[in-house]
Amino acid sequence: MNVYAKARIPISMFQSQTYSCFTHLLEQIIETETATEAIRQNLRSRKDFSASCAFSSLAYQQPYGQRSVEQITWRDIKEMLTLNGHGLNLEDLDAQLLIDRFDRDCDGIITISEWHDMIHPTY
Image 1: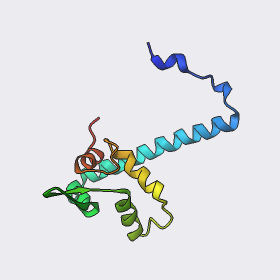
Image 2: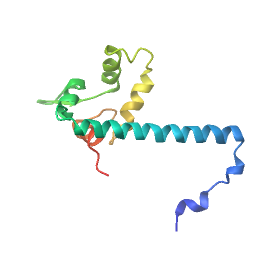
Image 3: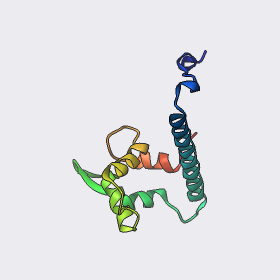
Image 4: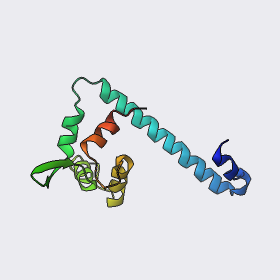
């Protein structure tokens, strides 16, 4: 039995404007996920694309004990987008949300393993 079936709220409880906004939000999420998957597939098919090289071009070298750890932070995302003319109106929170989308362990950074999982997910 579906646990969530008991928690369903009738659509009639929403005001029409709320329902319309919610429907639009879901459509936007689906469109974004579809576009993201198309980009992943395109990258996987390119022989000249290296996920590791792409990560290294974004990553900041953080000293960690006696070794360096490469990681991507929201600042790295914002800097890369700004340098390429796309981040002029990007708020810090928006850049953090991009990191949060793929940050599995919620430490505020994307590691190389999280990056590879984002580029080459297993379904």
